[in-house]
Image 1 (cartoon, one colour):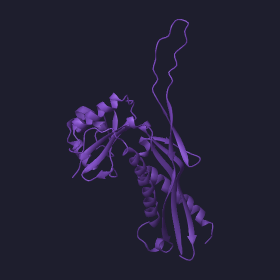
Image 2 (cartoon, rainbow, N blue to C red):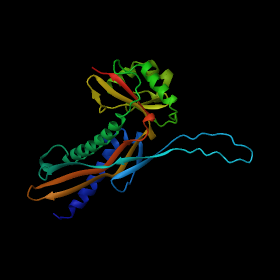
Image 3 (cartoon, one colour):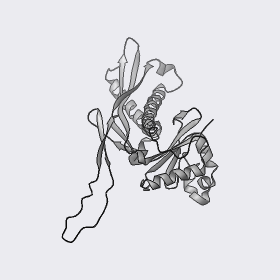
Length: 272
């Protein structure tokens, strides 16, 4: 066997991992502000304040807004997900071992991406209610009012992420589940478990933080969380003759930071 065959194996495997990572590995990456191709260990996200308009005297100087600018730093870290693939296992196994490792590696890195985002969401101190009750329509409307009161843009870039128990609670709210309110195309059981409601993309997630009997759910704007990517998911495959095995390694370099806390509302919900 030619020793260069590993090159084709690596390219094909790497492409499969990247596709799997984008398809099912991470659910939250597209809901936050992403900066790609970061050089170095730290990425900087700019947080810009509000300007104010005012009048001026005839022939007077135009007033300056003095808009605040704040640089928010995001530390990048390296993450790896690797495993061994015995050369003869490919012959004996009924399952496609390469596909199994492809999905396992991509999903592991995807979960890590979501963990980074969730860890920053957990820093929010804008609470809509407490964890003493389940997710109710009243709690949803309280969060809705908080976002509006903070002038968080209602521009279609808002996301609400809840646990599966809270997703069931939402399905009991007629305005959320009834086609008469949201239209058949937006129903939560149409395709993937996600839907639009109140100008926001709602989705369930199994990885949200749970403390005791309280599940942390969030409603946030895309610009509130910064996700920096130094290296997209990459794969490296090396053959070890002493083990008669391939070592399949997947890696990435990423980081996440809370850019603007006002753009995140925490809905803490009771979950026994």
